[in-house]
Length: 150
Image (tube, rainbow, N blue to C red; front, side, top):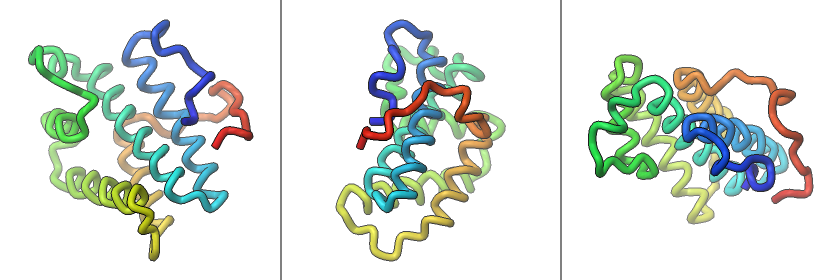
């Protein structure tokens, strides 16, 4: 994965680790897509989305995360439910966007990428990440990536 060897999440605050991981996976996912590695690119970008959502909740709405002792923010459905409680993501369009992005991930994991609309996928992902305030960012602010990574 694009963050291996570039960060030590144990040495970071959870929100900072989630943001850095999200951005590293965006960079790595985009590179993989540009190389035609659609399944690997979509998997990396979905990981970026999940960690971007975690960062958003931890940094802007920690009360949603920490009020329930059983809250598992590593679970996609839990994250979506929590994020929809925030004013910015209350619009049902974000649930539809998340479901679309999740369906593309399922297609990638099942190696059914025929007819993959890279433009629509990237536009949807970018809009979501922009609302999360994960994007835009500068690649120069990230640790250098090893081009040999898968």
